[in-house]
Length: 112
Image (cartoon, rainbow, N blue to C red; front, top):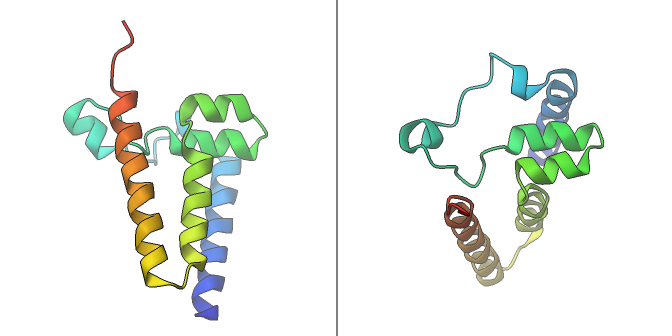
């Protein structure tokens, strides 16, 4: 388990370096969201790469504009990583999935 944590940390650091160096809004190497391309609707993750890039550069307002749920989702995923009780894990997992589905629906409702 310790080795897995190191691999995750190294992968996260490598991704952070890539996002620090390259601007995802001007990148040709990042794929377009398949859900958005297929349906025309934003998924819960749309804008997350740009939001992470903005966070790494200290632009909190831009990050919120790209994806307001990014930071809470990262905290949720981090919490899941450390929960050892299966019942608590499942409850936290399902609550998070429910919030992500709700967010996906809410961000696709047109506001006049």
